[in-house]
Length: 165
Ligand code: FES
Image 1 (cartoon, rainbow, N blue to C red):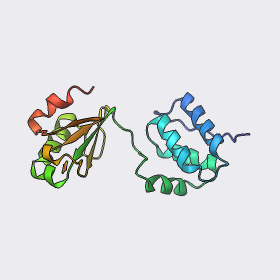
Image 2: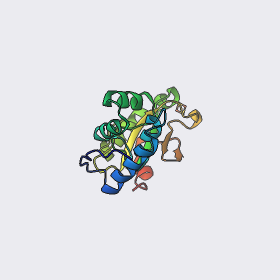
Image 3: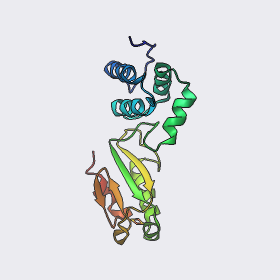
Image 4: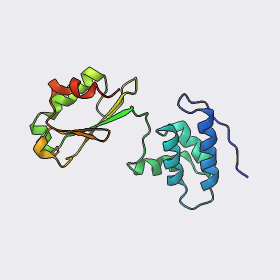
């Protein structure tokens, strides 16, 4: 029988999501190494892992929050902040740097109010900088979701990003 814990309120977690989360915890709680599959499935439900959800998972798995958080932060798979509907990954490798990627990043930050490493308030874009994307001949290079864009420039950025609602 699964243990029921108090479900705190959170703007991004609906009642249906809480039910699914409790099912995920109950299904995994007796397996060794349950934390990672539980974190992965809970992130699929909510889109990210708010601290309050980590607490709930810790209670369900009988683990302290510090341990759950430690495991979650060890792997690059988990996000502790909400993500935008679209993820921009922009290359800061040497070739892209030389071709002016920093100007492109500054323009995206200004025009779309999204900080590097963060998400804008409307959750339209998340902006991440990454290492060489392996397309240096087309520097500067960025990915928007699964689309690759090469030879990007600050002046072309609106043309390119306005299509992603
Ligand atoms: S340095 Fe940017 S794609 Fe290689």
